[in-house]
Amino acid sequence: MGDDRVPVLLTVLAGTFASQPLAFAALKDAADRIGAGVDLADVDVIRMAPNVRLAHYFRPQIVARIQSIQAGDDTVIVLRPSLLSANPGFPPAGSPLRRLGRFAGTLIEPPEFHV
Image (cartoon, rainbow, N blue to C red; front, side):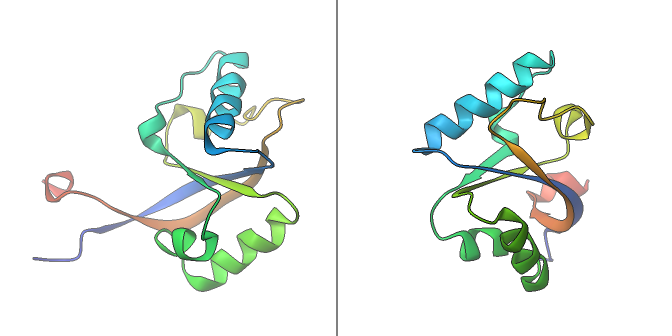
């Protein structure tokens, strides 16, 4: 059994939402507005225990940086690499989502990912 962590650049968004479903809806709406699809399996909406949840992806210094940039927003969204996250026009103007940036992180992948 080896280390299944894979280094990756993850896109991080922020916004203020009353619930996780509303954050998902805003994400889907923003993707639709630029003609892109979103696979919700590539998305992690974080509203509770952000330090712990972000630590699954990022080193402590990066978690602190994200939370500093996040400011008053109560929700952070982590996007796996995809056509959507690579689109420089995402999120579009007028969206309740704000792009915080792309940060070096890791994902835990099943062993077949490495084959």
